[in-house]
Image 1 (cartoon, helix red, strand yellow):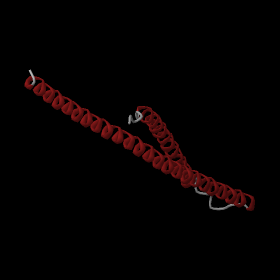
Image 2: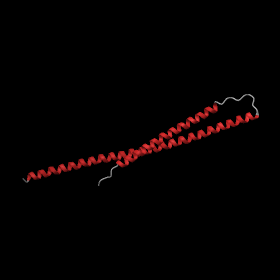
Image 3: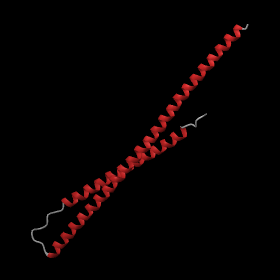
Image 4: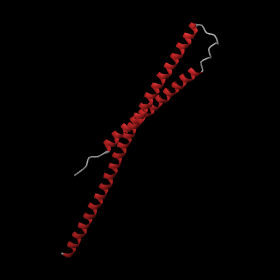
Length: 142
């Protein structure tokens, strides 16, 4: 019984592995950008100028609102960074699965090729044995 070729499967799994690797790279870039944004917002919050020693009520309220907004921006950036890290981790797992599937198909193809070569060698040996026996038989009856 002839087995179907695994070349189309390997080709397709190779494409999927490259796509998953590309998605992993893009996710890592987004995670790095989100990390940089978070660090920039933290630095901006920490580098705010110290307020003057005496403030009016309006200035105090404005300073309070600025601080609240700054902390909100940091929280948003932290949430975006966490989401980007999760996306990168998910992309890494998907790439690992795609890579494992490709390697599995490649190993199976290799095993089939080795087994096919072994069977062909055994068939060739049997044919040679039959040929030798036929020649002996032919010489004996001559």
